[in-house]
Image (tube, rainbow, N blue to C red; front, top):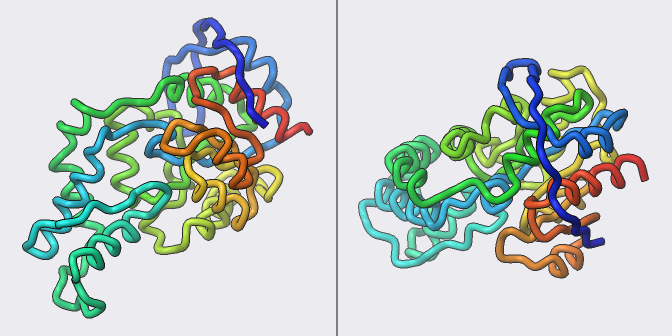
Length: 271
C-alpha cells in the first residue's frame, strides 16, 4: 500500500527519555495519532533510509581494502542492503583475493572504523540526513511506547559515526540495535535486536510489534525471514512498486511526509 500526504507544522516541546535529554520540535497531529499505540520496536536501516553518504561509503570501502591488502581495488562493490563484511568479501573476490586470507590483518572491523574516521570530514561535507529523517525520529521519540534503534549492515562503531555526523544519534538507542559486526545474516539480526531491546526495556517484542524501516528489498527480506513488519522507503535505488513487490507491508516515497509515515505505523499496529 502506498501512502502520501502533506507534511504538518511543528510546535515546541521538551522531552527526556532514558539516556537521551534533548530539546526538540513536535508535530502535534502526529502525536495524537500515536497516542495509546501498543509497545513497538522500530528498527531503522541507516544508509539511504536516514542519510546519504553521497558516495563516501564506497570510497571508504576502497580505502579499507587498500589498507588491508596494499593494493588498490579495481572493482566497486554493490552496497545496497548488505553488511560491511559482505561488501568487503565482494571486493576480495572481485580483486582475485583467494579464499586463503590468513595473511590479512585479523581485525577487519577496526580497519573499517579507521577508514570511515579518516573520511569523516568528507562525509560531513558531502553527505546529509535525508529529507524528513530527523522529523520522523524526533516525532516518534515523543511516544513512550515506541522504542527506536537500528538494524544495519554497518559495524556498530561506523553506524554511530554516520548518525552522529548528521545529528541523528540522539533519537535512537544504539545499545539495543543489531549490526553487521554481530556476524549474522541480516535477517538473523532482527531477533538479536528484539532480544536486546526486550532485555533492556523488559518488554516482549514479537513479529507484530517489531517494525523494520528500510529502503531496499533486502531490508524487506530481513523482515519477512526474521519475523517483523516492514515499512519501505523509496529513498534509495528501489521504487515504491519494487519494494511492494518484494513484500513490504507499506511503501512510501520518502520520509518527507511525517504524517504518511506515522499513518503506516498506526495502521500496522492497530490494524
